[in-house]
Amino acid sequence: MSVAARVLDVLGAFTDATPVLTLTEISRRTRLPLTTTHRLVGELAAWGALERAESGAYRVGLRLWEVGSLAPRGVGLRERAMPYLEDLHEVTRHNVVLAVLDGAEVVYVERLSAHDAVSIRSRAGSRMPATATGVGLALLAHADPELVDRVLAAPVRRFTPATVVDPAEIRRLLGEVRRTGVAISVQQIELVSQSVGAPVRDATGVVAALSIVVPAESNPHAYAPAVLAAARGISRALTGVNGALAR
Amino acid sequence: MSVAARVLDVLGAFTDATPVLTLTEISRRTRLPLTTTHRLVGELAAWGALERAESGAYRVGLRLWEVGSLAPRGVGLRERAMPYLEDLHEVTRHNVVLAVLDGAEVVYVERLSAHDAVSIRSRAGSRMPATATGVGLALLAHADPELVDRVLAAPVRRFTPATVVDPAEIRRLLGEVRRTGVAISVQQIELVSQSVGAPVRDATGVVAALSIVVPAESNPHAYAPAVLAAARGISRALTGVNGALAR
Image 1 (cartoon, chains in turn brown, blue):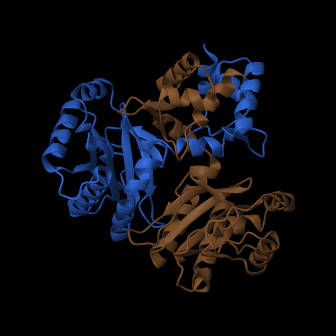
Image 2 (spheres, one colour):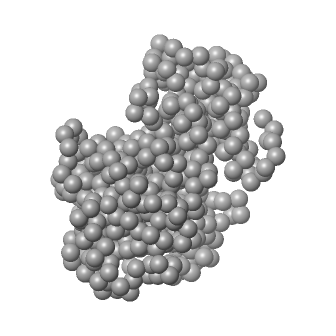
Image 3 (cartoon, helix red, strand yellow):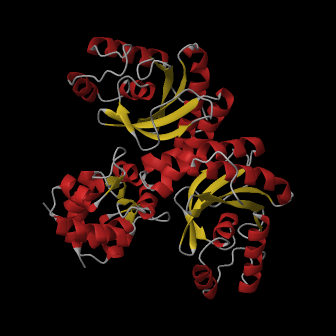
């Protein structure tokens, strides 16, 4: 394994579930000798990619966050989308999320939560399966058919009794998203909530999706116009076009 | 130079001003031979730390953003602070920013902008000098005196005719921040705006600052109570304490 790959392995050892790791834990996760781990972690910490927690363990450093913030599908997309997400959040007082597709998963780029909004699992930087989520269905509906085949060939993860796991039924949902422009996922992630999503486009096609996460007892269709308006606003900001975009 | 340092050098070549770079540009900036650059960039792209733009040039990839989002002073801090920033933004309709201190500079962790708010230079992930900004004055006022000496020993950058560059005058401003709890920076960055900032504390001390950026013609003192309330709310969220915090 090359040294570059080792460096990246050390960085990849830090995850949502394990944001703070000791040298021994990093060594075990990367299967690198402790001495090699010690040297690499020292170099990463000196640069600011890692920093030391009070416990003496390591966590991701501010400098890596700064460089990461240059990713166009991360903070770059988020910056353009933010005013529209804010508007939607303010009008509805519910959670609003923005996500991009990465293989069979969605990566959340933004989440706006009110103090009193329904519980929600995602946070900026976290991942979820593309199926079952409103943003995921909106993205898959416009994804390469080969990717959809690959996603549906693998077992689909079940979160609640309402999670749709039958590939034929998921395909039907994707068709409905293409027909209506809106992706509605009812209680598929948590029984207390449902999400209403829509795709976001730039000049190249669908690049992201947003959704609003609302209580299970509300009428999801009532949120569709606001969600579509926000998605169009962001699409317009990304393309720099003032006229209407085709759905 | 070690290979790890070279990998970090390649990542560090990407900045706010140069978010997209060709192989040749990366090679020139890092002073690495083109063949070495080619190999390292290939490994970084395969892992997802870099990705290829339509032009064939490279930019920071989604995976690096994901790992970076685990930085506690980046997205971690932002997530805890967000509801309070939102409240302040919603009540005032002005730009709200959250920043941390890194040496003589502040790094912006969050910025909430309204469509119609006054212009603002910062974005999440960008840097500014600690002096002259509301968040910077709030942070410097509570920083290690040796750091303050070091910052004021270097020439202070001037942005507008109103930028305070005299070290003695800056020290007076810092004393006022400690006395009043609020940092007011009038037209120091742009003549159209001023900022009202306050420090955010966790159990270890001041860890961040927030500020509101308002038009130059408004009365900054009118915003102080709302800014202080938001700063206390975030401090409480960071410490998990329900009672009042000492200022």
